[in-house]
Length: 135
Image: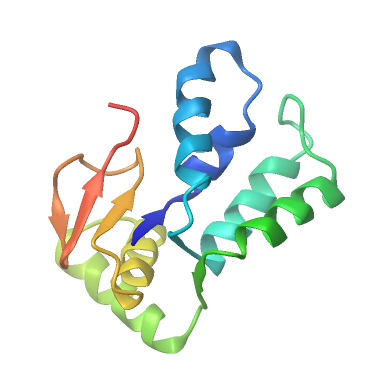
C-alpha cells in the first residue's frame, strides 16, 4: 500500500501548464483503490489549496469535498506515538519535523513506499522507500 504525500494531492488540482505531466501522474496515483494518507497530509492539502495567494485557489467547500473523497484511503490519525516516532526520525535522520511525521505515519500504517518529491528518491528510511513519482 503506497502512502501519498501532500504534493501528490496538490499536483492533482494544479492548473499550471508546467504541471501537466505531474498532474496526470498524481491523478493516476489517486485513482488507485489502495493507498494511504495521514491527517497531516489532508490538513496540509486544505491549507495550501485554499490559501488566498494561490493561483486558482479552491473554495472551502471544494477542498472539503476532496478531503472527504480522499478519506476513502487508509488515514493515519495524529497520535502521541506518531509524534514520538517523528521526533525519533528527525533526531536520527535530520529531516524536518513535518517530513519525519509523514514517514512515521507511513510506517505506522505498514506502507512500504512513500510517494513524494520532497525527499531523496530511492532512499529507504525506517523501512519506508522514498519514491519520487515525477522522475
